Length: 499
Image (cartoon, rainbow, N blue to C red):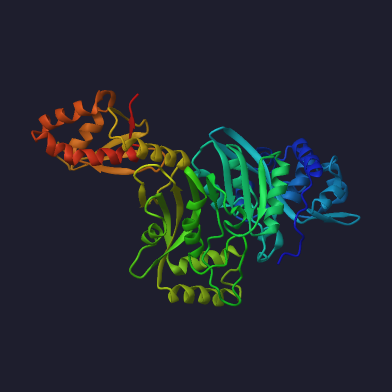
């Protein structure tokens, strides 16, 4: 367990702290200018020495707070008093963010600015979290509260941008998802099994002036029994960890269950807490086992009358997965604990016949019509995923009434034709998306001709008969081949309904 106490949120002190941070301009771009882009990028890789060298002679307010809060280094008390004139050193200690003596202020937490972009614009928050392994100079304690990491940013980018009445952030951690969702929700309930995490989340809400979040303690859906939500988001502690003596169980990533049972529990339970048309989204891991893929196992967990859209972003071998998460805890192959941990992980996977571990995002919806069931692997870079998922759901709903009368090619779609030397006819024709899921779809000349004619003016049932005449095939035969593929292009966002 951590040697430092949890934060002690207090509205008045948090407001005073925020005023000092604002006056010091403790934000991403000013800090990046202060110590330089290269040093800033190095910090993301766990290297703080470049920053220390860059600001070694700087005793200004921003440099002092950068060393104290961003890097987690002790600072002279007099310098911190100058940097926090409203809150003061005693106020910082009262919030549980530092310990002090007559000469020195020693941080108990990190506080870093976090930029965000959503449908409503660009902004930035201050996010407090526990000291990381660089500041601690060693492995993380089991109750460590993580700041904004890669998984947090991934989930934020995948949430469908909907305005809702009630939302739930299950497993809120430092509270970043709750803050994001609160921008589009009337009320947000944020839960966590860790009281330490809830203290950080509440503090972060106070620091950033967000007042429409209610924090509740408890495991999984227990704190919201009998309640339903329009949107549920979760970056749960999904990491698969051996239930073996001596293997650390980090609260921020380990849900305490065997294998991928936590993800299974979520997708089996979440539907009962969704309003009609309500959406649940989470990140997770799932195991492929001898004879059955992880995607197939996940599909079997979700009732057949619900929409399910799974995007698997990567798949790791048991060895690669074990090494990834052992290193995440600050333990390297040079440490004596590494090999016993690796053995425990590999034995655990072998006991269940695990052949691979998938990672990605899951979307569930309590839809009103024929359910969407889609599981796919998308390994290429993606962008605007939340908006793309929203458009895909809307396209699925629209297609229930049939193809639109007119279609138009999405603005990011291009066509590539591959010809063998000396041939006039292409051997391969591809449609490519420039954004979102960056899909590439192989098409034949008839489908390419259809897409090329979709200008929003010609009707679908004008284009298709003309193509049948051009290729000298019966219209019924051509349409039987084209129609399901056109529907696929609409669902994937290559074709959009005309106005």
